[in-house]
Image (cartoon, rainbow, N blue to C red; front, side, top):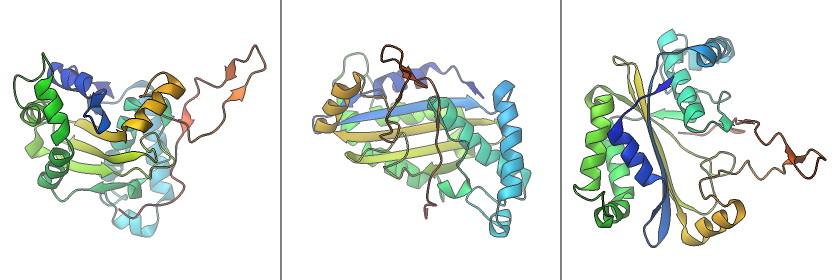
Length: 248
């Protein structure tokens, strides 16, 4: 997958990197990708396609949140969702996720409602920030998203964090959402995710890591290399797979 060079999305993504609303801090990610695969993505796609086709239950082969997994188009949809997460969060490996970890939304309206309601306080910060608030935040957001992905032609999927074993989840999260907008005709996928942490949790996270955007690796201790205290495997990707199926 290739990240799309969309100036308006990049500007919004920069703003959403860390937004202090006063009561909590919001961290967001807004990225769009072409679904044309090459290199490692193409190799992983082939491997995942074989694993999903062979490992799915009879029920999943006939019906799943991304469509019947006996259908190659449905498997492609699942693979694009997984690859998008891999690109947005390169320190994690989402290749063990399966269709039941996602939900196809009934339509765009519900996703818009959830996003708009959660980002009301963010909108106020946008309007008060020099260089950003020349137009209402939500209008700017949806205009940029529509320009990149053509919303009326999109299927909408969501992924819900279990708040314990993935890079989004922290026990101190006030709220979080993760949406994918997939345009089959354009072969593009756009990912929008935001999570809010209490001020205390955000400050504690900054104190631990020096960067509040560093996601934790499930509390596992880093292995010491025995070489001057350097850590072995610090650059390794975390093999992320949900331990339990979620009823979405």
